[in-house]
Length: 323
Ligand SMILES: [Zn+2]
Image 1 (cartoon, rainbow, N blue to C red):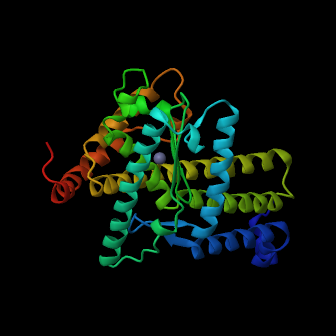
Image 2: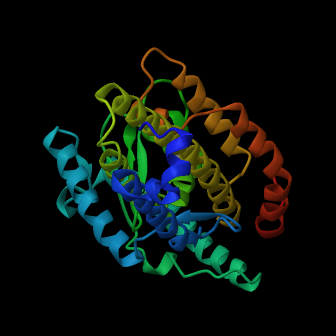
Image 3: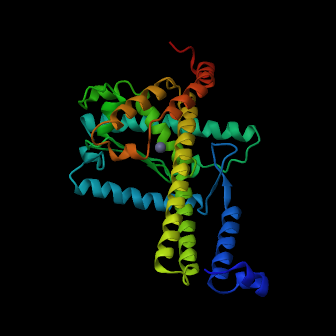
């Protein structure tokens, strides 16, 4: 774009708003307004806002579809979804599934209480917990994984039980005899869903795509090399934004998870310990995929140090003294 100052002086600023550059400018302003208009409070993370254009109903529908897809995919790869049919739901399959469902039920109840606490404190809480379609399954797979999709669809992979349990390299039923660390993982994952992080991610991606299109149109009269440079810069900026965005989400999920943990009477001190373990595993040759989006960092440990006194006080006021 060769606009020397002389030309601008001669033609006035009107020149700047004509042609493709004008389209780009109008599109970007439009995107900015859309972005601002759709900023919503993050449930369970008071004071935080995020772009969210999805309703809870949409989240539940989308979550249900992806959940079925993922579980079917696991089944096709030979990873059994435990208790998927009642007939085979016996022995350790039943024990594992029931344990996960019990932890889930306690965390749900805690989330309901927390919603009520926020309402009492004057926050506008839309009531997420009762609108979710809480569902829990255990996938028999060596992959250390766990997730909660939008809408409350939870899956725990047996591969994560060793990390949350005895951490001896072997998954056994012993690994669920002490459930606090598994509750930490589930609380964190449920925290993501309660805060609508999936919906925020999708909403943001949509806006980024529109932005990318606008930039592409606006670049029409540039040279190819210049175009590539600008697109690359846009990509890098978008990626950087996204990284900061997901780190923010991790911190929020950690805090929500901890809030749920103490209200469900699980030992809050297990949380930093669990993430430390996760961090050690992440340092290995080939970190599990799950780790790449759940970075263990100094910031994380620091956050827990900061939150712990309140968490312990909350726990003890509800559940008795911590040993
Ligand atoms: Zn996370």
